[in-house]
Amino acid sequence: MPLFKDRKQAYLGMLFAALVACGAKDPQPGKPGAAQPVSVQVLRRRLAEIAGQANAAAPADVDANTRLEGAKAGPGLRLTTTYTLVNAASEGVNSATFEAKLGPMIREGSCKNPELRPLIDRGVVVVLDYLGNDGNRIGTMSIDRETCAAIR
Image (spheres, rainbow, N blue to C red):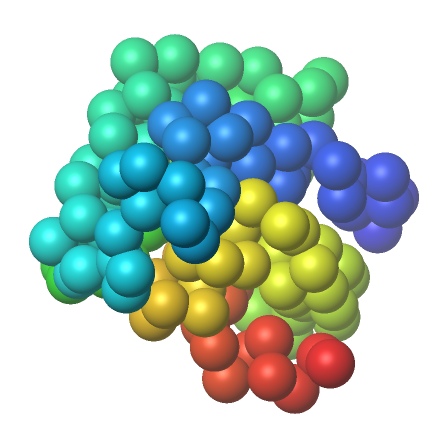
């Protein structure tokens, strides 16, 4: 499926841009205001800010084939971002095909991203949900500490 060929930067870009814009980098130890460790409450606030910013921008074209539909913080330390693949119907694409085409690049890109990884290491689960142009789910990827530990 050529639809998924050059999508790595597009899919992850919107999420990572939101993380950067919301100041999701780790506070630097020894700097004023650096909280050690970051509390669950602070992480939940960050996730709500990230989701709010994504929702304010949505719907937003990520590229010619992908549209950001929105994001949701929670429950708990979870951030879910929903995308539509505007040139692909869900028919004929199952979770196995989705996993084979996008899984490795999404996991690696998420786990190696210096903006996102600190959140994952603190227990945030990043969920990327993909819909076809018919509104039906094509696939979902969840990235957590265990996922990233397997990539090292």
